[in-house]
Length: 89
Image (cartoon, rainbow, N blue to C red; front, side, top):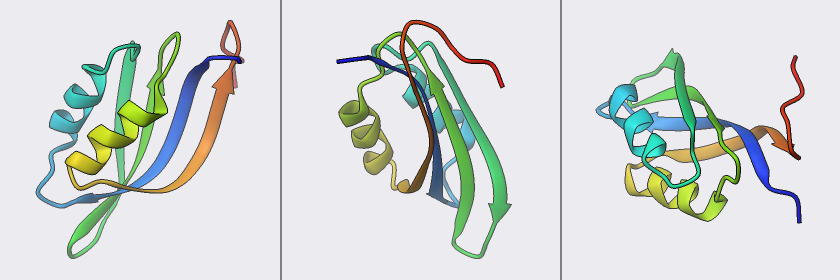
């Protein structure tokens, strides 16, 4: 089965969770070579963010476990890339 090398998630984060801390936690997952957390909108109790992760073999179970442990909920998977190289664009 092809490895996941990039995933883009649309998530809801608690307001008290700093994007720097979340990015560090995601970056510590084995197989993650790059983690990007982009806050898109702030609301009363939550913030909406796009999370982009890249690496040679991303483990979705571990990623979801870290997100759930920090109170983050995944609204949508916006993009998934598999294969041996990235497609630009």
